[in-house]
Image 1 (cartoon, one colour):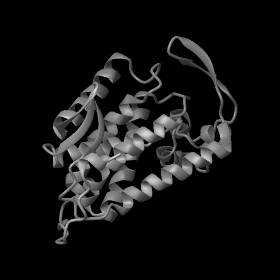
Image 2 (tube, one colour; image 1 turned 90 degrees about the vertical axis):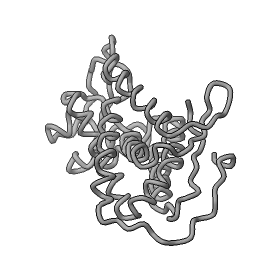
Image 3 (cartoon, rainbow, N blue to C red; image 1 turned 90 degrees about the horizontal axis):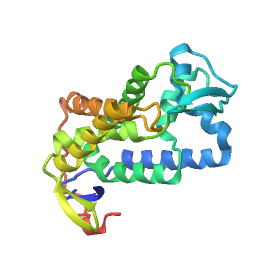
Amino acid sequence: MFPLGDDNTERRLTPYIVWTFIGVNVVMWLAQLAGGEAFTYGWAAIPYEITRGVDLVQAQMVTFGSDVVEIPQARGPVPIQLTILTAMFMHGSWMHIIGNMLYLWIFGDQVEDTLGHGRFLLFYLVCGAAATFAHIAVARDSMIPSLGASGAIAGVLGAYLVKYPRNKVKVLFGRGIVYMPAFVVLGFWIVLQLISQVSVGGAGSGVAYMAHIGGFAAGLVLVFVLAIGRKRVAAEPQKVIRLSRRR
């Protein structure tokens, strides 16, 4: 069930913040490619570093699933807690960033339309931080780097679910393309995260499912808090973006 687009015909604001976040993620990914392993390991979020306020610079032997592996470390920012911010713009592979940016592109614009530019910027960053803290809550002593925009984007998905539950989403389902209401697509996604966290957790899976759950929960709540007093812009809708033209 892979999303390809949504019905955004009622969107009124141009999603400048969504576009900016996509641009920042791309720039950071290019910096990772240029800086290599040292940059990635230094600026990713490591629970052990954040909870203890230390910067690991020597490789560490850690248990990863049923194996004991060596995890490289590198010097990071000062204070090291800044990695809570930097890690949410970093990725582990081309498919990682492409998948995350696709989700942000599809679902982020209408949440930005709901909150407005400034509030959406705050919303995204707080959801990303909440995702990291949720991960730390279940992996306080982990020395495995955590990175990716998916925690913040999970917050976007949570907000979209409660604000646009019946909006049509175009998805690749099996070998065909179908349209489903958002509550089915996003409901399936969060249930999958919950099942994965309970069954395999994050320690040996390579995926911080709890970060997704934490970001999603933050988005569910924060979209209502930040929408207080928000007046919808009374402007003509943006040019319709047809579902069939979404990428």
